[in-house]
Image: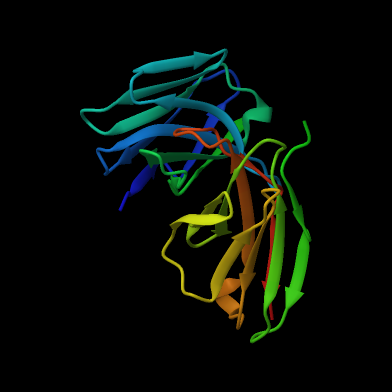
Length: 112
Length: 113
């Protein structure tokens, strides 16, 4: 089955700096890669997603890049703000499956 | 539209009991997936239902089961509870097509004593 690895597990940045979180996946059939943000005690919220026919997608301060050949994808957050502090999860799914395989999460702390 | 709702939000049970959790998807969403979230194992897929049929199943024992009703609401059941079943159980709903966004409910926090 699919295996998703996520790094780093914790990340601290100064407010205004950029943050990058990286994930690798094992199943070459995976074609959908969402990123979720989960604040303490709250539900995971989708922040951005990318499909395998696209190499990069951007939404304001958030961007995701996908390298299908290397089987890795990354989340980039620019101009970080304290409210960006949360746990971020990457995930992958393949074909018609609505089964998401999640990475282990990254605790992002933005220091004011 | 109203978001995904789950009931109850919190549950405390003892070992050996069984529990039923409920999930109401976003209106118009026909697929419901269930996930278990623990500090040690992270977010793990349990199963997915569409049109009252289980389409995918994760690597969990048979004590974990579920069903979906004709209005797309879903329930999951855990029988013979073990201490290790303590977790946040999340459901997510989506439309029926491939690569759909999954929207999560707030979860049910289950504590097994």
